[in-house]
Length: 84
Image 1 (cartoon, rainbow, N blue to C red):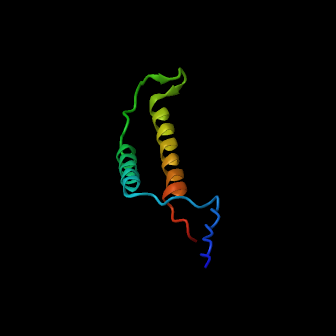
Image 2 (image 1 turned 180 degrees about the horizontal axis):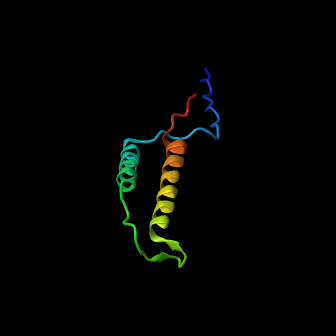
Image 3 (image 1 turned 90 degrees about the vertical axis):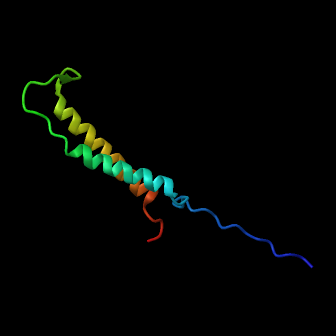
């Protein structure tokens, strides 16, 4: 007798491996770090410039927003459930 041939389903480009517990812990730590650094306050006054033109507190806020956007993209690309 012949054995039935097992056909592997084609992988959809949208399919991805589920995030493991280590990645979920890293994500939670990143969110906690963002929350903690969001509470930092800068004193009003004379501060040095970053790149010669941007005040240090503004540069910090821009960097924070880029980091937060990176965490959101990480969450939606890797940690979001793949089923709708």
